[in-house]
Image (tube, rainbow, N blue to C red; front, side, top):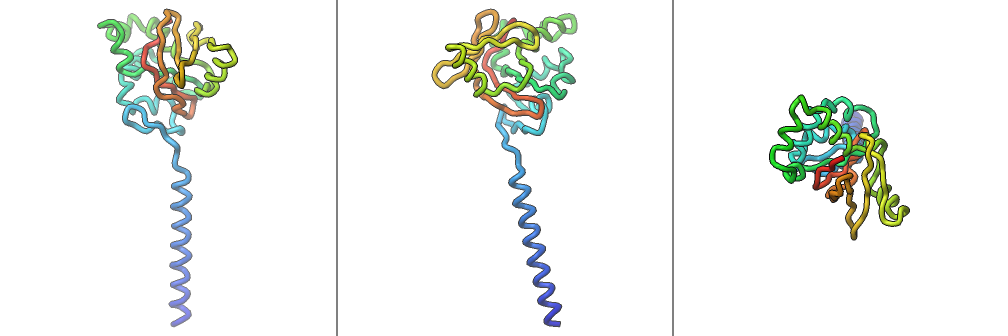
Length: 190
């Protein structure tokens, strides 16, 4: 009987050690998330899966849906997306967003949205390095085909569009399974 009791106690210890190790392994596998719009952005999810959870990007998500870009931005990529917040869209002249999301304006909306996307995975560090190498600016071609100019001021990274408007990167390096998002405070216009 004593041997059976000892064997049971040893088994319980072994099981608790196993469960303890499994729990530690699970916590070490937790993803490093970034909070955007009150929601964690998971590196294992794609751009669309994360963006739909950000309360700061509801206008952008609605525009992506209206332009028919959900499938594209859910694909393998990789993509670098400069994601304007709702407040950035609010800076546009009154009625602009409502007009752009109409079916008859899909081509214009698509042009504007794809102007916010670079092919490849461009971290803030790599863009910053390109700016440094370029003597204070770096020019990159968007998926839409036109150029964006990047520059820095102090510790901040900025993007200048074709119209001369500047957008500040407010949250950099929100990693996704199919690229990276950089949150910006102004809508870019081709």
